[in-house]
Image (cartoon, rainbow, N blue to C red; front, side):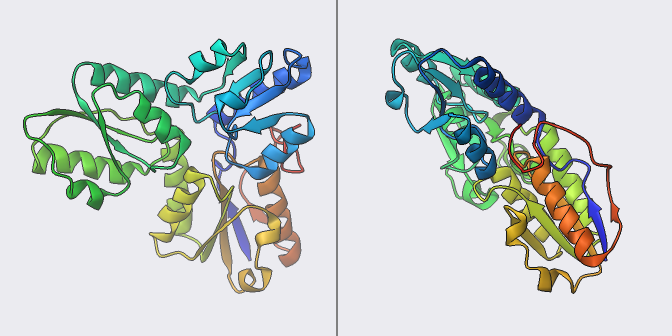
Length: 305
């Protein structure tokens, strides 16, 4: 069996920056009132468990934070106005929003303040989407699929701006933009807010999927970008399995395949991918193709250092 590992697998820069900020707070001991994250800082349960062991607690709402504590804004960002609510409660705020998400928020705010209605391609329940929608000053319409948007009755007298959750599929987004401009002839400005890193790892996953018999995608089950990697792989007709840890591997089934692809989401620690790579290699005695092992922000146990 040959195993091919994606070079783009593992933490993206936005996740690395967010965790570095949290690490610095943990090392410094916070402000004395405890360190909290407002929602999970990233969508990976192993990383969250590692931080819990270091005393970092996750809370769902600003009202759950005690005065004098330190709150870290998650990489996905938060709805507009939340930071002011935290400061009003006497909470120290550390903004760990991914720079790509922050840029998308500000672009949406700029265009909707001019009177344009936001058309947002994203997942309704995703925290990033909730934040992006809050920046739409002139209202918004949310859609999760191209078909869902096609059924919406857009007002020909209105002006729109089109944006996407940063981890959505670029091909679908570009097709939606073409539908609006060429077919429906809307007055629409296209804001290309999909992260380049997301696009690159999806494209690499597709290239690998076309050359292997089976694909393994590693990452939290709540991670939207990880789920979408699995979706674009499956769209190639390649059997694909999304796992969180090595314990999810069905080894009896995997042994039936001669060539396996391995990748991970933007919030997946390198240690989790390394562990699965070792298991696939040791169980089959086969060399593993891919980048050499390297140290990064993730510890070998799949958590944070």
